[in-house]
Length: 168
View 1 (cartoon, rainbow, N blue to C red):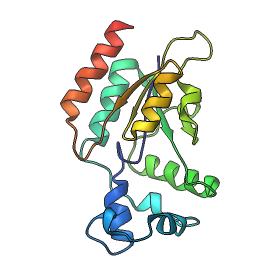
View 2 (cartoon, rainbow, N blue to C red; view 1 turned 120 degrees about the horizontal axis):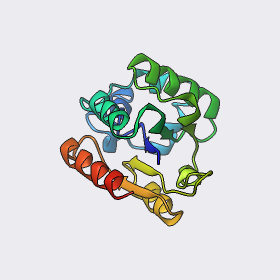
View 3 (tube, helix red, strand yellow; view 1 turned 90 degrees about the vertical axis):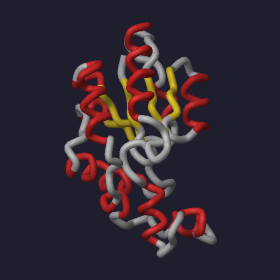
View 4 (tube, one colour; view 1 turned 120 degrees about the vertical axis):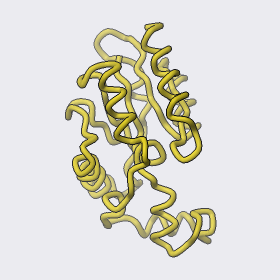
């Protein structure tokens, strides 16, 4: 079993960074969000994001729970900006000491492809802030846990992860 952590919304404070990039107090105040996201293409935006306070603690906890080889990142790059997004997301992970083993570093818009272990068929875990990602992950046989670092309890997330690992 691998436990994959999403980056934006779980480890990295995407929404605060997004709002600040466009001079707004809250990301929902950005008038044309699609255009604003398009303007992030080709920039180092992901590298500029602040980690959530619990990002390092969560990563270390997952490594303790399933071992360093069981820890992974599964994050979506911006559409039409894959190589640039991946470069800056990887640099961000290195900067904050949150890198998993390279074979567990996944950047894709189709996260659910990794819901099951390809060798033994056991379900993998995805911790993500986006309900649609969790729904697609679960539909492919994985174990999805919805977690939004800016509002959910890290203690509760840890308890959920312990239960999942103990029941596998």
